[in-house]
Length: 228
Image (tube, rainbow, N blue to C red; front, side, top):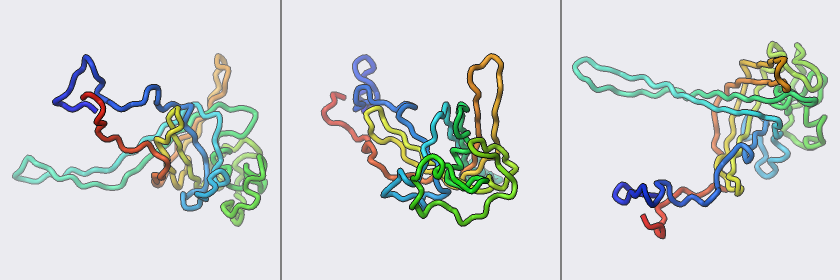
């Protein structure tokens, strides 16, 4: 890493120590739906606890924190008081002859017909204790089979979780995090006569984001052997 006293824009980059070609991209990012809380995920066998979400075309995550500025009479200075942090997610997908986006997000829960997506797709959850089968089925159908869409259904009053993993193209961990207690306030599907695909989008609110410890690239320190 260049210092202000050794800055040389004609010879060395400011950001030193980057391995050639090692960058993050969407091809090395994974989203997986799971139980509402990270504590319900079996860390010893994550593959049995979360369900990878395919056909995702775009993902965005935003968050904000309430900050109040306190002014006083007799001074130009201010005090800052912080409040809650709140965040939201959005997912965009292409609909195909398989589970819809909401169906994949809520794959851990029993469908209106009494089966979860994991039950239908594989026997992954056969011996798992994470599947909340004790809950009653919804009174209002969320949809049937692969296509779930009715946000008025009490089925979507149940929250889910979302795991985000991002690696470099050399498979070194950059991000590992879990979004807890997710609910969906908005679902959109659009048709266009000039388009060859049918896009599906959801926006989501989460209660908190929980960082996960993984095999991270270590915190960058000053690299002594670089001529800065």
